[in-house]
Length: 268
Image 1: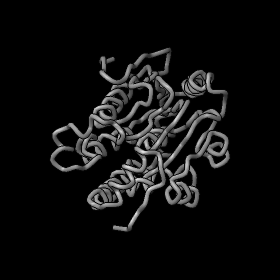
Image 2: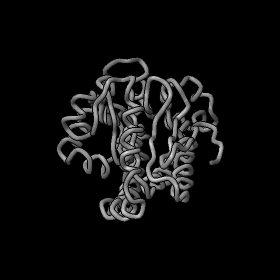
Image 3: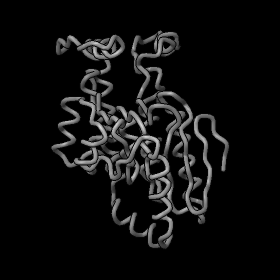
């Protein structure tokens, strides 16, 4: 396996383990998503690997984009535009890498030991299954930022929790704990926090006991055209995000999040 900057990949029998290594919050950017997509391509090309565990170091699984990073205002792009999302790099390119994750051929189990926020929720939902704990927090916090959901979540989240539960998460930006996530189907297994990774590995090993050809065939049938629908959705999401990034409300939403207060949105 290739050596990566922000992730580590190991194989254990017929499973692979991808560990995000940007603790404590594992904030995402285009490089992280690209590395995960590249690792999944390598796993798909390895006939010995039948399932993957996606996990993370630190207190969060992936806390989304780091809008509170004081260094982002010093980046060339942010300095030119004043846009707090510019530290992510090209969001269009980021979503192209995200679609590659949805095109992975083998089952993925996400070990979500902490926060999965925004794009981090998108990453968690790109997996087939999620192992969580009571301390886990899932949130589609886009509307609290004055923003529109991204990472294909307008397609992928309803697939997992149903349209109305997805609407509830989008419209409120609320944080969904592990127990509520289990009830709505966002989490498949709930265990104590110190057992999340082991439980995810156990599930992946159970999957890997099955016929590799049967797994590939069945998963392809079950996924259908999901990746294509995510690709189409990200094009619309990007257009809406680009429009809203220019608003006063977006800047206020980011500022309010940094200052841990309720935003004073003006609708402009």
